[in-house]
Image 1 (cartoon, helix red, strand yellow):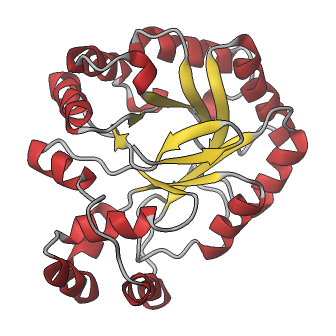
Image 2 (tube, one colour; image 1 turned 90 degrees about the horizontal axis):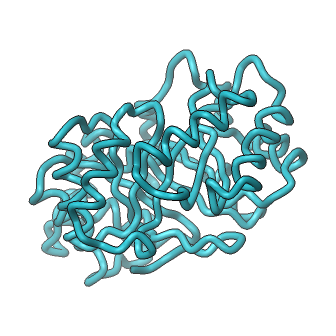
Image 3 (tube, one colour; image 1 turned 120 degrees about the horizontal axis):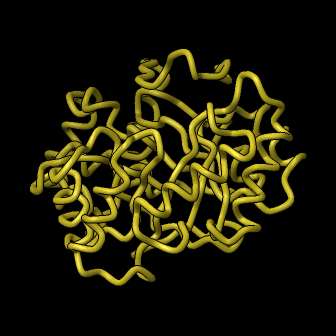
Length: 275
């Protein structure tokens, strides 16, 4: 599996998202993903399914040391000792000794960034997380986080797809030596109907989803985490290493963000976005 290397973390460039997967269906989907070749599982305490994610990991038979596992801590749990309890609960529910990466799921609207970073760093110092990072942080908040952290931050996980440009934020992550992890990389399927993407997919003999995911991982230091409960789509989404998009095709897809602005993750927990 190809990886993005960031401050000592080797993050597989394509991961399997687990948001909204529940129960036995979640376990089956995780096991299917690992059998299909995924080696990066993205979860969160807030998803309420980490016990099932753990069952899927065990059912796959893939050794633990071959899998990069991420969890996230909710905004309400960012102060100690709530933060540590959250990570400990995730590790226990997953049935593992430590996660490879723990993220702050959303920046706090009530606590100083320095307080949140102290909790995040403590989880790493305690050994329950190998690496630490962020999710949904803007450039200004990234700056605050880096000023307050003891250990390096290896990624910033944010919404990213062809209908939502993130050029400045991705550039900032690269300047700090971070990976940028794209969630909702298909814009909850909306971008799959775009005629530009459809035409490239037809020419390449690939699905629109495969074209978009390939566009993601051809960008330096970008990781993508699609999600599906359908075994056929799970396998198709990782089948993106046998072709490459041309510079013109990459540019054509990137240009879609200049004509569209479609954000699917926006609500009370969201910060004031860079745009």
